Length: 111
Length: 290
Image 1 (tube, chains in turn green, purple):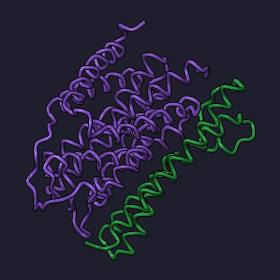
Image 2 (image 1 turned 180 degrees about the vertical axis):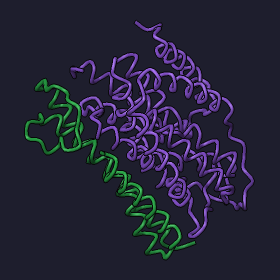
Image 3 (image 1 turned 45 degrees about the vertical axis):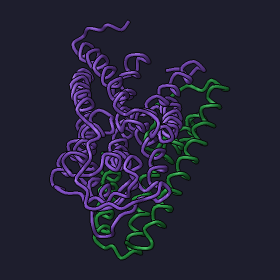
């Protein structure tokens, strides 16, 4: 058993906790603002978050969803780094495969 | 849909129940969220599926943050099977945006029948262990680098159990199918992956549930992007559901050792059957719900 195995677990756990906290904070703020201001709901488009006419509550909730969705993707990248450090090349390559599929999805999925 | 305190409260509560069941049973997030959003909140099924995928990511992240820390998740097994679930998820999401809502509702009804059956058949039978030794509850599980094997502390036996996953091809095939269903219907697919790992791959059920939970986040984002690209995600609906789901999943991980999994599975299977029948009727243009 590698002595780094526990460290890898702790790093992934911290990343998941941080991602969840950031996403929950943004979404709670957006939702609170929506209830206070009565902002209308609109569907999110891929470039919606950078549109200036998007209501702030919708933008905050959209950013929260983005932060939440980014967390599992970042966890894949984290595991590549951690397994390379452990010299577990086989599973670093497997994680890299997952990352490549996700990147291809983002690049081709919107078409 | 206008967001009022009442609807926001309802959406947070829905997410809470889904997250709680998802963490406790390993199944229940999507199969609760999608039909409730369609039947009770009158959302379109594709918007409901996109919202459910966000809830699936929230369940995976919240429960994963606890199970990874306890050493229950086998991250190497998860990452290996994720290649197949992610490809399946992309295929499912791509197909789903072109399918009519009534066909999706009918598919959902059928999948709920399968879910209920598997829920009732899944049991906590012990797996063939590779080795065991006396352990303490504070000793966390671990993985073996380069292998799909690991250890975890089994509280019922009071031992550290060593296991070795077998029949990877079976797990890969079931994971790809679970990914397709996840992308099509917005569910995590744990109802397929947990029995496949526990029964077919010789992985202890607690490790199987935690590993499946860890996987569903990546599978869900693969198909979520396709729904967002087609304009099916409403942030003000998804946000309260996701917040509730995160809270429910965190609480579920605390209650996991105190609640009877068998009783929960039976209750959930009855709910799933009733809602599945309503979804099938809805697909045929009939409805028991006003």
